[in-house]
Amino acid sequence: MEWETVIGLEIHVQLLTKSKIFSAASTAYGAQPNTQADDVSIALPGVLPVMNREAARLAVRFGLGIGARINKRSIFARKNYFYPDLPKGYQISQYELPIVGKGRIEIETSDGCKMIGITRAHLEEDAGKSLHEDFHDMTGIDFNRAGVPLLEIVSEPDLRSAAEAVAYLRKIHSLVRYLDISDGNMQEGSLRCDANVSMRARGEKKLGTRTELKNINSFRFVEKAIEFEIDRQIGILEDGGEIVQETRLYDSDKNETRSMRSKEEAHDYRYFPDPDLPEMILDDEFIEQIRNQLPELPDARKSRLEREYHLSSIDAAHLTRDRDTADYFENVCAQTSADAKTVANWMLGELSAALNHAALEISDSPVDSVRLANLLDRINDDTISGKIAKQIFTLLWESGNSVDQVINDHGLKQITDTGAIEAIVDNILRENSAQVSQYKAGNQKIFGFFVGQVMKQSGGKANPKQVNDLLRNKLD
Image (cartoon, rainbow, N blue to C red; front, side, top):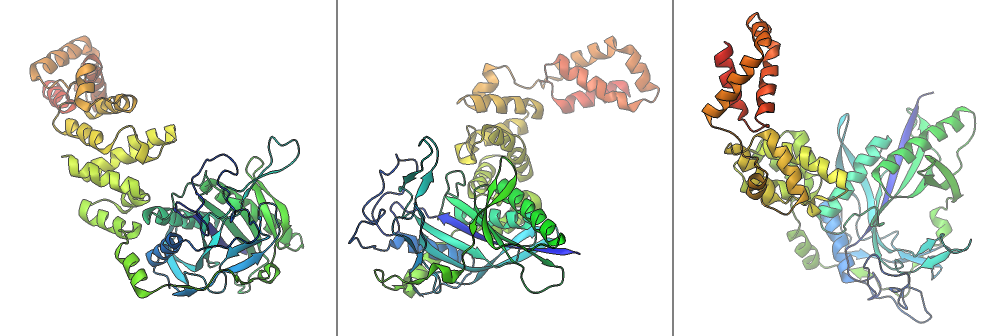
C-alpha cells in the first residue's frame, strides 16, 4: 500500500519581553534556579495575574507579519493538567478565541513553493522545568521559566514530509527573528517544536491516528524524529496493527521515539475562561501602530536582493534566511567596490565556513562587515590576489587588526611589477625545458603546471593575470 504522511507542527516561541506574561518577574536566561520565581510564578494563594501588554504587542506583530486575522477580542482559559512543573495545576492559555487567527506562510520545497496554513497563534504561559540530574534519583523543579510568555503557532496538517516540516520550521524561525519577537535560540529553549504525525492510505481524505513528538529543539532532530516516526507507524500498519494516540519523546542518542504518555484530547484539559483575567480587547489604533512598524520581511527582502543586486534566487534565499546575515550583506555592499556576487560568494563561502566551525552567529563574527569590505577592495585594486585574500581572512579572524595592517605585517602585498614577474617566469621556463617542449608539442594542459610553479616561487604573491599573460606570450 502507498502511504501518505500528514504532519502538523505546534511551535512554541518564547517572546522577547523583560518580564513574565502575568507578573513583573524577570525572564532573563541563565539565572540560578528559582531566583526568578515570584509569588505569581509559584501560584501562592490569593495572587492575581496581570496581562503583559508587550506580550500582546509581539503576538500581534507576528500575526500581521503572516497576514493573519487579528482578533480584537480574545479570551484566556485555564488548561487543566497536573505535572510537577506546573505549580497551579493548570496553565493559562488561549483556546477558542486566540489573539491571532488563521493565516498562512509560503515555504520552498524540492517541488517548488507551497502554502502552509496556520490555524492560530495563541498566547500562554510557560511551565517550569524538571531537572533530573544531580538529585540522587529525585527530580528538582526550577520555576524560573514558569510564566515566561509563549506564542504557540499551530499549523494546519498541510505538511507531507520531514523535509517540508523542517522548511516550515526554518521559515517560522526566520520570521520571529526578523520581526524581533524572539531570539529563536533553540538550544536555550526559546523556540521548541511539537510534531503531530499520522499516516493514511494515499488518496484517503480522513486523517489517521496521530502521535505527538514533544519538545524537539533542533532542525536536525525534528527531521530525524519525524522520519523515524513515519517508518515506525508504517511498520505497525503494514503488520496489521493500530496506531495508539500518544505523546512520544525523541531520543537523539538512540535516534528513536519512545512512548511518554497517552495523548489528551481538548476536552480532557477541561478548558474554561480564566475568572481572574478579563477579556483582552485590542483597539484599531494599537493594531495599526504595530502594522506601521513592521520591518521588511524575508520574502520581500529576497525579491529585492534579486532585483537590486542581481543575485540568483538561491543566493538571495541563503542571505535573507537570517536578518543579521541580510544586514551584513547589504552593509558590505555599501562599503566596497566589489560586485554583489563577489560579496555573496565570500559570505556563503569563507565567512559561513568559519562561523560554522566556530559555532558563532554572524552577529558575533570576528570579521565585521567593514573589514570584509576592505578585504574585497584590496582584491579589486590588485593589492592582493584572491588566493592570498583567503589567507588574510584567516589572519583577520584571529586578530583585531585592520586589513592593511595584516597585509603589511605579513608581507602579503601582491607583486605587480612586470619585470619582477617576468624574471620568475623566465627562470621557471629555463628550469623546466622538458615541460616547455611538451607544451609546444600540443600538450595545452601542462600550462597550469607553469602557472603553479610561478605562483609557488613568488610565494603566491604574483598577479595571476600578469603571470598568465607573460606565460602565454613566451610559450606561444
